[in-house]
Length: 116
Image 1 (cartoon, rainbow, N blue to C red):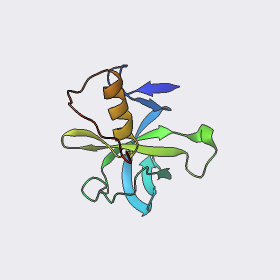
Image 2 (spheres, helix red, strand yellow):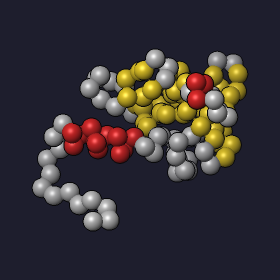
Image 3 (spheres, one colour):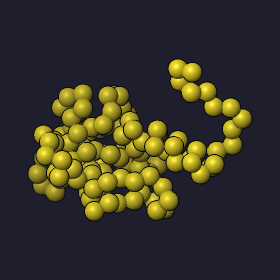
């Protein structure tokens, strides 16, 4: 099942979304979260430290990835903080920019492509 965040004309977050609680960061791309009563590892799709967001007890949103047959069954995609939800997926800024450019949603005078 595909889930959409916000308006259906926005960025797709594939998989069923679940709320969980952040416990700790186990490795560069792995976090331990509490889903229900069980601690489970989740893939963290960023190498950034994010010490101010990834705090024990912080609410997080997981995307179910069990169909991919990999070591972690979930991706940690968002963290809940005092202002709302914050994406921790390093791929989201590129998807958001593509979405905005395709819809002429940005006012710009020049875009320089990397390496050109």
